[in-house]
Image 1 (cartoon, one colour):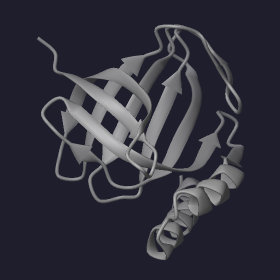
Image 2 (image 1 turned 90 degrees about the horizontal axis):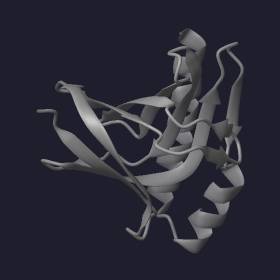
Image 3 (image 1 turned 90 degrees about the vertical axis):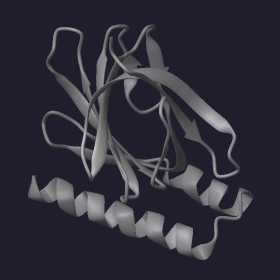
Image 4 (image 1 turned 135 degrees about the vertical axis):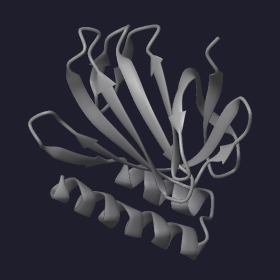
Length: 152
């Protein structure tokens, strides 16, 4: 029997922004890997239409300030990578909670990268009163992620 996790993307005040279920794939000292699929078509502001059946391979790092999703079309080909700048997750027996710090990086199959939601980060930085160390860490992590992308 497979192990199912509920993933909760939270705002800085702890409220759940999005929640979904995934199946455990593997884990080690650095991360936990899950896989899930979109049950319904989703219209996303930056990603466009995500078809039902799109598969999401998800990596949640214990001590890093980002997570990494690889989306595949239902036929199995790469759709895109999606990296959330976020606080390290809290992981329980059947859940993963993380605080999303709004900034995201999309990497398309042709190698183009797109940074999105920087305005949302600035609005929420003020609205939720992100501590300065959290805001600075988010921006430093964005630079780290960009460097990792350029190396790959």
